[in-house]
Image 1 (spheres, rainbow, N blue to C red):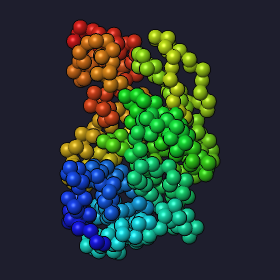
Image 2 (cartoon, rainbow, N blue to C red):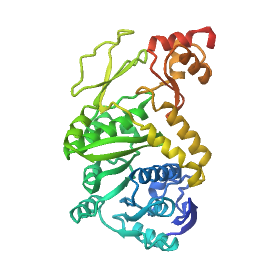
Image 3 (tube, one colour):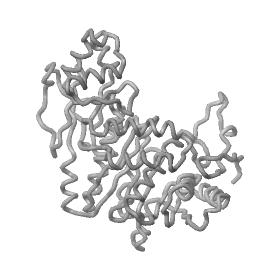
Image 4 (cartoon, one colour):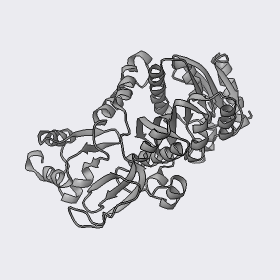
Length: 398
């Protein structure tokens, strides 16, 4: 490895990573994509959440679990799972880049985790098929690619045990948020929308793609947790081999109908798009997105189990994680999609109210209302769009 390295600590492990200062451009800018072995410090929070999720899953299963980190780079995910998740029987970390594998092995030895972690060097898809053929499927597979997880999902399903958990990261947000709709259609088989709540739609598009791939292999999916943070989305899903449940899973796919004029939206489960041509409130033409996942994107019991692990795990980001999970739990029972209040008040040409005051007002009228982790000015509510505008126009909250 002929590049300068830097020793850091993340969670309970120490890591050698390529020294970021050596890879800055002439203006001082640093992009992790140009490192010889990828490491992104912006994903520490994501890895913290993953530790809580995998631990909650292990406790749900109540037996020792096997984990695969198939795109390991520095080895950070696999190392942290070995060091910080209880009840782990074994972990396989893999990368097709031999330089990454060499660095991961060095980090593995430094943390003295050789007895729990096995290292491979091959294409991730080949790894899944080989381990499936040898009946060494995994309880947990964590797909954290640079870009889209789509090329790996079908192979990962082959490598997953019945009742296992598949963790997915997608960072191709420009595609999923509608900037490149043809790429999204080609990659995920879905039409995206450029809307303020696009991160939630991105989760629903990827979950819908997963559901279709899983059903084709006679698996059903259950979304345990999902979130959209920073530059990525993340989905934790449990897959069960059952053709009847797989058929039911497909019934959870549908389309979103959205009015770009007034903000009206409706998510409808259906195999084919319906003939919703005009907005029922302002008579504007509706945009149609999908197919995508229409049902819950958080299982409240699972999120509560994660929340209950917070103080046991003593993670460095504990206050942020606690706040994050509190918001997740608060919005878990809410309807699909959310409203960004500033977007609505700009249409009305009024000042946006304090968000908690707006939520309390909706609740007083008998509607569900909560914050959402997706956006600091976002509100999840089942109030119809005309009632939302009435409340925003009311002098009681101006």
